[in-house]
Image (tube, rainbow, N blue to C red):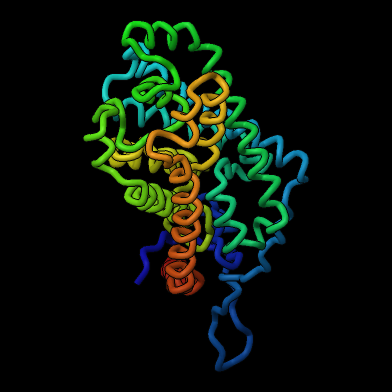
Length: 346
């Protein structure tokens, strides 16, 4: 039996449940409907009234693209800014502190842009929605969304370059780093990402032999699949365990933080083609040249291909799991019956 609170007046929208509660002793809470025909149940599904699901209307494209630019800008600004602060100043001690800032940055970016665009902020997320949730995200919006996300990421990368510029030069001078030559990944890593993590394993041939491009692609694909799986799980009303009070952005950000803490030693944990490629373009323009694109192992594509494969796979897994969940309406019909019986005992 489902665990129910004894309240009356349940209203069910398919795959979404709202409960209209009343104060104890009020007329609304005590209201019942009895059948006037002999041989019929005294209570029918009047206590559990299915209603048509509201039609989803996508936001206007111009406003949506603005939302994606702003949201991705904030996400990449907070994220790459935290890496820059850690690398250049030691402001964040340890990988977990960087991961937490990333996670909160993702959360704030979602809250800031969700009402404008739905807050995809990631081409892998947009592709997954375009493939598996076309009723929420029409396929024809995919390319404009990706363009907006890349624009926001480039702007954020440029902002970090300007604000941290003097410290980047000091860091390179102190360490004898010549921008654009092998070893300059140590300063470029605050823009694009590298495998394995240069700050942990160095930049020599021995370090490069630890993680191959295909291994890095697997890591990026897997991490993005987990992220999109969680996003799909948290944004479907069919999942009756989703957190209430508009807390989904917090748990999405927390998922990003956990994934970074686990996998950033391997690939710096991108999970987002725009987050990597936008700042990487900035680094290329600012003189990191081949160390930015194509990268020391020719592997800049890892952070594009991996997430674009892994994201839709993660969404597909949730769609399959969600389609096989017990119908949540049955649970709430049972709750309505439990509430009816409780009211009869009053």
